[in-house]
Amino acid sequence: MDKIIMKGGHRLEGEVSVSGAKNAALPILASALLADGKSIYRNVPDLADVKTMLKVLGTMGCGTGRLGGAQSDMCEVEVHGPITPEAPYDLVKTMRASVLVLGPLVARFGRARVSMPGGCAIGARPIDQHLKGLKALGADIHLTEGYVEATAKHLTGGTVNFDVITVTGTENVMMAAVLARGRSVLENCAREPEVEELARVLNKMGARIEGAGTSVITIEGVEALKPVEHAILPDRIEAGTLMVAAAITGGDVLIKRVVPEHLEAVILKLRETGCTLTTGNGGIRVRAPQVLHSVDVKTTEHPGFPTDMQAQLMALMTVADGTSVISERIFENRFMHVPELHRMGADITVQGHTAVVKGVRTLSGAPVMATDLRASASLVLAGLRAEGKTDIQRIYHLDRGYERLEQKLSALGADIQRVKA
Ligand code: EPU
Image (cartoon, rainbow, N blue to C red; front, side, top):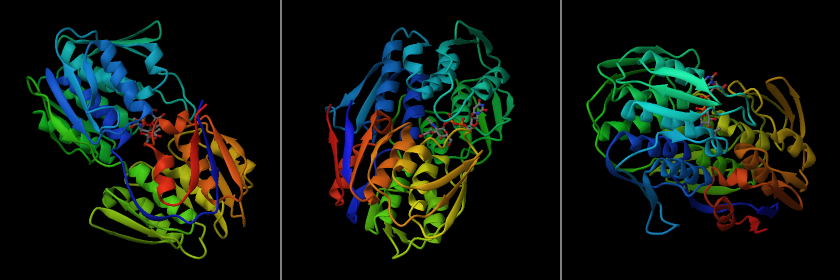
């Protein structure tokens, strides 16, 4: 297993470009199932999760691959000939977002058999809202042998009021509704930019979706969709992570290929810490202050502060002046980075959904273990600041969602390298 070895204390400076968004790429790749023919996507990040989604589509019988070699950002999915509408346990257990094939499969092929995702490191993460939505569109849902089986001769438009705001749930039901007969109204939807991006792609394919990006989405079902060519939007969480990297090292970094409007809550929080942030020309420049101030944060659905940035902001708060209260409202178990940050000298107390972080003068490098994707990012950030050597094991978690992070940081001046096992 690869690991990361780094030495902290280097100020980051320069320019860095953000890759395509993982959480937009995953549903968009799944949406290729909705049309016969070849869809081509650009700005697809080279990540373990993207590979898993391509594998899921490949086992069903789709043609998938990178165009122009492994390092290229272009990817194709071809749907042609018979499809086995099934996502097996072995793949779903490695990536719960595989469940995103459920909606497209039942809408297009009338049948889907998808392994039920279990709990995961950050919480129980049920999919009851995905199933509720599909049922409202007329799908029969059964749970057998650990698999969700959804069948429908034809889906019909319906009204779905989500009890919980769910990103992939909104996406799954939206992908089902585009081929349902008649009009669907989805209420209490997730408003994340990735939901909006998926709707943009589906509309390019011929769907009739309005309201994506707001909490009510209206969809007029159409008979068929056509394949698409699309460049995926930049990853706001990678951008946010790089912004914190600049802040925690006392740096000055221009982060390019970002959509600042997608990062408003993060930008405002970083300004509160004393950082100077300027936006323009598709970039955000972050200049760290002499002294970082503590800020309180509560994670909420978009446009609030994203749960996917909570661990990174906590790393920053470990070295800020004062005490910060961080409250995690989306997932019940997303503080797994805390014991690892303790090993580096952080002063954090967790009580239920809240972590109280008292800033310390210095962190010290230590051997630590990545436990989930964003937790891994927080350890890298702490390692950038810590005195001495930090050794991060189990970085396959990091590889699920960050494309060549160590190379990007190293180009900005960090002393960081991946060591192949
Ligand atoms: N929930 C339910 N029932 C459902 C669905 C969700 O109770 O049917 C609950 C969840 O347990 C959670 C909350 O609703 O407490 C929100 O979960 P959501 O469904 O929105 O999460 P998700 O769609 O599974 C996506 C991202 C996550 C991100 C969350 C929240 C993708 C592929 N994943 O997950 O990304 O944290 O939204 O913004 O889009 C990451 O990239 O590190 C990551 C975990």
